[in-house]
Amino acid sequence: MGSSTGPVLLIGTRKGVFVCTGDGARSSWTLRGPMFLGHIARHVMLDPRDGRRMLLGVSTGHLGPTMFHSDDLGATWTESTRPPAFRADDDLGRSLKSVFWLTPGHADEPGAWYAGGSPQGLFRSEDGGATWDPLDGWNDHPMWATWAEWPEQNTPDGSMLHSINVDPRDAAHMYIGLSSGGVFETTDAGNSWRPLNAGCEASFQPDPDIEFGHDPHCVRLHPRSPDRLYQQNHCGIYRMDRSDARWVRIGDNMPTDVGDIGFPIELHPRDPDTAWVFPMDGTDVWPRTSPDGRPAVYVTRDAGATWTRCDSGLPAPAWFTVKRQAMTVDNAPEIGVYFGTTGGEVWASTDEGATWRRIASHLPEIYSVEHADPHPSLR
Amino acid sequence: MNVRIPTPLRSYTARAALVTAEGTTVGEVLADLDRQFPGLGFRVVDEQGRLRPHMKVFVNDEVTRDLSTGVTDTDVVTLMQALSGG
Image (tube, one colour):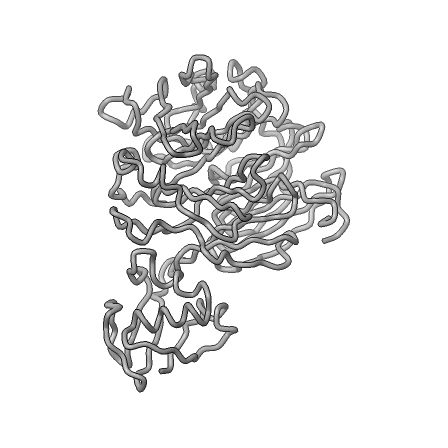
């Protein structure tokens, strides 16, 4: 594995998995891969609870979806013996097309993982991803077909369940995001659910003030301040403080010529007032490229009241997209921020967004970039 | 009977292009393949028992998507995927 003490980035792409490892100074990076060349790797995640178990959801254009796990940072992999799937006797006849999102379970539930799918199923493993079961309380909820807008509307990348957030204070308290459908919450480990979209706009709906039917792109719960949520939505950037349970559009404070459309949102692991976004052009036919072809990350350090443009070192003009799982942060004293592009580049900032440099290029289209903190024995 | 395995599924068959399986229907043959090569079945047939959209099954020279199609020991079953996309 080498002897690096720096960050490890797990990169899921349209053509396989790569691992990018930094040195302690985060100045030199080495790239390993591809693993699973030709497989569509939507999400790769290392378990932060043990630093050993790594999960990967893959599919190909022809074969059904499956999951693999590795305990040696990808040197060897084992396929799930029962990958995520809907129940065989499913009343709606659903079949899983892809595993789109992975989230480790609560710290008190070692081995527990959640997977979000396309279509919008939710699945749980209790053995580190070796076997999976449908979470019936969600998948068979009487409102599921309505919330998930079933039958599928065949959007270009399919409908998807993402942004699975587990409350660090309570394993039974979780949030999920549906694209589309909205944000939903459970307080009983997934047996019952309710929409959580008040205050969030849905400008593409006939009634923009509806209870559900929204399009969250990425929802993040702050680990140190779990009553605070941030959301990058189809209709802007929002924050929710649970005392009032209402989304507030903090993206209104972005420059008007940039707007507040985008896909990823990442939070400072220690400061609940700091978040990074990557604005995209949501006008006209939704190019999903940076406004005016000038890529920039924006950071807020006051919970969305003000935003600062961070583009020093980034190319312009440039016409790439950053997908919702393709931005991540490390946990260094001065936070490192990273994003991967649809053009196959990984960009890094080791000064919290102030300056950027490219640390990997010529990769396939990047779907996900996740910071990993491996167990010392794996370094 | 003999079953021809396409390249995307050979990670399950130790790279073998030709294997043998038992069954009186295409579905039974696929189930036997999954018993021999765990995991292969779900890549080909979804959880509702439907052949996945881009998979094809030939019994000798005849293509079928009906997993109840009958087969005999002298037939050759060919699994094939419709290559598409980039």
